[in-house]
Image (cartoon, rainbow, N blue to C red):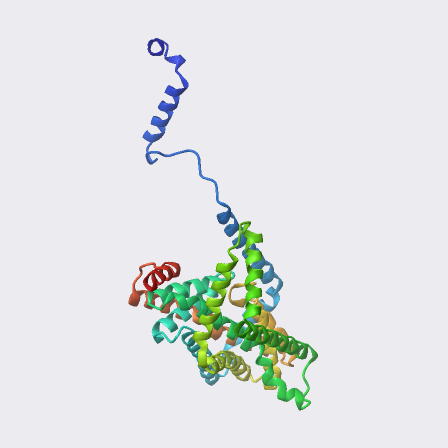
Length: 390
């Protein structure tokens, strides 16, 4: 009977019939795939958090760049006077910068248990270039470098620990760089108050890092306490029962792997980390000499250390703007006039910041050409390695 009424009175169609007709019309519309639904899935919490973090990073970078804009514009405005730079000094600027990059690659190869030079250098150059163009680029650069190293056949079990160890050694070397100016302080040489305070902060950071690192490497009770604190934080943030035993085992395993990575090679690790910053400082000092500015080397070293420590904060990609403002400010404390300081900083940043960008792109393309483009994540290679060992 209902079917008969529907045939005679089409205006009294049931809701089921109307729904079927609507779905058939929707499926038949041109340009729409079959089974298209008007409802859209909601965003998951991790996706929302990731977007919020990116927006906050971009907002923070914009605020910082706005604050340092006058110093950055002063440095960039010195491009018209690049012809005033002594051409012979460009060789010294580029050579010292290249030596610093080589020390960085040597450190990376050391903490990664000496893989071949090519993947070490190519992944380092690509990661460094990538870190200079994305906000908070250190983590993204580490992920890119890890993926490139995995493709080259480097064991994934050593990548995470090795890169972390290399970063900590680099930070400790930078914090301890003012120690090189200690003889001048002991001899009673004049050091501006601002730079002297900065050197004291750097030395304090170095001593703290050294003490904490020594305790974590050689004291099991301190490391066990750290694992418990991390487990409590994990439980608090993720609102689930933290597997403290597993976390403790993982922390101790990473510590033992770090010991194995460095072993008796820690003097080489310290030397290459210090060489990375010393040659980079010499790159800046060569640029100062190229513009006929000759501040005392120990004062310039303190100025460089202060600016680089500030640039390690993940405020802008590669410290863009922060390093320029910091260097011009600290060089002013060192007695360098504003115009020569801006020109020297511009020459230094052209070589140390902008030149590695195309070089990193070339290294990335060359690496892909040599090792292929198959995407293999470090976690997948790590699980494969564990299965093989089991």
